[in-house]
Each structure stands twice: as structure tokens, then as C-alpha cells.
Length: 206
Ligand SMILES: C[S@@+](CC[C@H](N)C(=O)[O-])C[C@H]1O[C@@H](n2cnc3c(N)ncnc32)[C@H](O)[C@@H]1O
Image 1: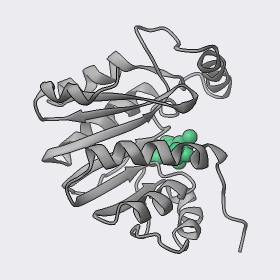
Image 2 (image 1 turned 90 degrees about the vertical axis):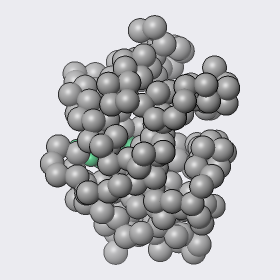
Image 3 (image 1 turned 45 degrees about the vertical axis):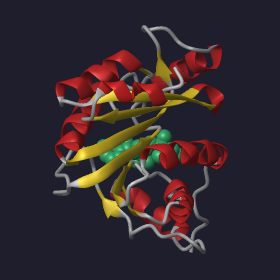
Image 4 (image 1 turned 180 degrees about the vertical axis):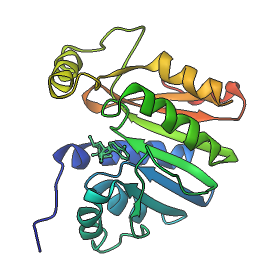
């Protein structure tokens, strides 16, 4: 069996991400993880959050690696679902959607489709949580994010760090409001969107 894929970033950010999920995903329910990557988040976070029915998904090529990680003792994640965001989505609904480090990898039209299709499958009181680097007022928030953006564009000109306001506008078009913006290590953030009242912004640390 090939060695399982490994991301040091996932090991570094899983603890801070858990703290945000514990705050915003308190009610038991189903969670669809989009672009699960190696599967490290699914394996570890599902073990820490047993009240969530954790469904990792990704393109077909990543599913074998995810399956290897889900063999970790304690993992409670469901077998990974093949989901290429350019194609058909599962019917849902899901109580929570979670995605990490995908919006700067997908081209902007695919980010738009992801928000549109994802929100359409979100339960009426559901939440959509997005982890990653974001610009603020079209400005990089750190030199390292600027360099990262250039490296992304060198790989594919359609990749790049997205503006937080642009992302929030996509959610607003689907009737969801940003209710929190959590600073994470290494100049990342978790943005939380909900159909609920915008006054829940009190939980934001921005
Ligand atoms: C940088 S990786 C992040 C992986 C993981 N979430 C993490 O935080 O380490 C980007 C992920 O987006 C996924 N992705 C890119 N395009 C996709 C698409 N069209 N449909 C589904 N997933 C896609 C990739 O397969 C990959 O798993």
C-alpha cells in the first residue's frame, strides 16, 4: 500500500480549527467537508466531534489517501464521497459545510459555484465554515500571504487568495450572512456564514 499523503499544515491548524468548530457546530448534525485533501482533518476532527456525522469529500484521485487516514483509531468520519465541484452534488441537506484551503485553489467561477451549490444544500439553520487565507479590502494581510499568492499564480494564473468581502458577497447572494471571522495561526482565518441573524456577529474576533 502506498504511503499515505501527509500535510504538516493540517497538523498545525487542526487544533485551532477544532476550537472554531466547537463554538459554531454545537448542535448534533451532518457535516459535509469539501476538498478534504489528505483526510487528516476528517480523521482527527471527526474523532473530537462525535456529535457530528462527518462526511469528507474530494475528487476521485484523493479518495484512496483519505481512506488510509480514516483508518486512524478514533476516526468517526464516513467513507469519503467522490465530489468534483464542477459536477453533480449530493442532494443533502447538511447541517454544516466545512472547507479548508480550497477557495484559493479553485478558479473564481468555481468558488462562486461552490457557494451557490453548497448553500442550496444547507439546512435552514445551517452554517458554512471556510478556512484559509483571505485578503482584506483587496490587500494582503501579510508579506507571507503576498508571496503565497504569487506562488499560486505561478502554478495557475486562476488561483489566488480571495478577498474576504468578495466571498461574503457571494454568500449574501444566497441569503447567508457572515456571522464570524476568526483569526487563525499563519495568517489564516475561518469565516462563518449562516442564514441566522447578523447580530450573531458578536462572536467574531474581528
Ligand atoms: C490545498 S488542498 C486543501 C486540502 C485540505 N482541505 C487541507 O486543508 O489540507 C485543495 C483541495 O481542493 C480540492 N479541489 C480542487 N478542485 C476541486 C474540485 N473541482 N472539486 C472538488 N475538490 C477540489 C483538491 O482536490 C484539494 O483536496
